[in-house]
Image (tube, rainbow, N blue to C red; front, side):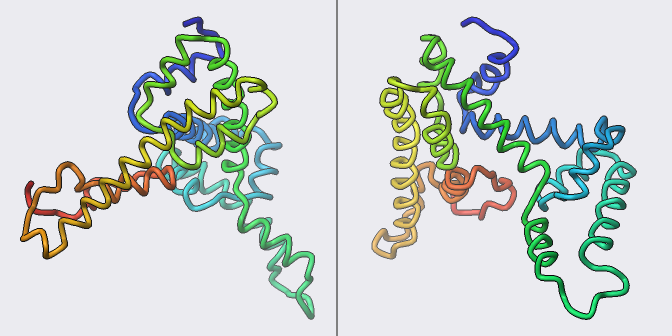
Length: 238
């Protein structure tokens, strides 16, 4: 498999063959961006202007706090809070709310600098995945060996860069559907079996048959997020 500056990160996230590779790609991009925002970006005024305007969602604020040092996070918040005060909630309020400013405030509340960046970069990475799948038989094989593609990234892979896939769209759809649909069928069976174990007609059977974590796996498939294993309910041994 030929590697270049574009394909190396793709190969890296697909190689483990565990979970959804596109989720691993998103996690990698998020981690790098959180490091950048609380590190090198502190010296780039143009970035601070954007972060002041857009802010961050809770998920990415939390990531920045865990990854970055306290002072960079405090400086980001200092200028962001000042902009909110100046733009939307001044110390001396006007006689009545400004509808345009209230609409702009709502947009900012639901905005996130990192979310925007990740969305754009995931679309770029998806184009590279498509190009590699078309051009490299080795990558097509690696793609087919993935455990699954989660629901969100199934949608991304099938709806981004359709023109880039061209005549290969149908074949790529079938390959991706096998990964997503096959895992969805397994999850459905596992959840059904899990529920059956609580049915009185099973006579108290504890044979969960590897489905104890089916709730957590289903949520991961549906949302792309993982629930820590330490919150999984302690069930009877199989």
